[in-house]
Amino acid sequence: MPSRTSPRHMMRRSPRPSPPDGGSPRRTCVGCRAARDQDGLVRIVADAAGGVAVNPTRVVGRSAYLCPSLACLEQALRRKALPRALRVELPALDAEALRRLFAGEAVPRRRASGDENIGGS
Image 1 (cartoon, helix red, strand yellow):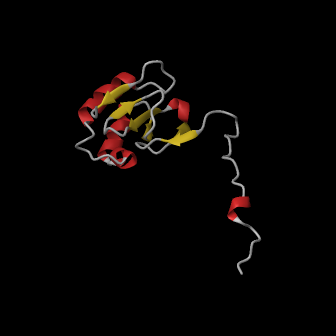
Image 2 (tube, helix red, strand yellow):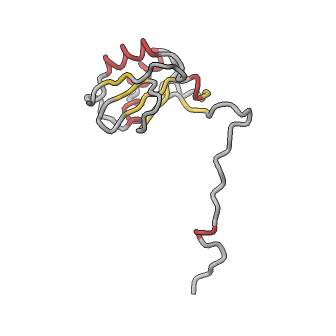
Image 3 (cartoon, one colour):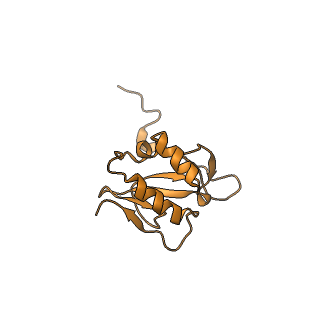
């Protein structure tokens, strides 16, 4: 008979540790790989329809974070880190449209307008 010293249903998962300063969670830029506060990064999301949104307010899907500079976007595209993080093929990811949209939205996340989509439906 197997031992029942620590059944799975009785084990508790510890909650995620909160940031020590009580601020926002830290995320890593896929371009320069610098860890920064989530509020200071631009979020790029691949939705289920195959489109990509920059700085969405409430969109569920694979996401990646970038510093608000075109240099980080270019580095992420050159290293193919952005398509890898989003798990999207590069032909489906319209790099030129993403550059234009990113240039207009390269402001940290907490922005009122941000439901801009690229591709998809």
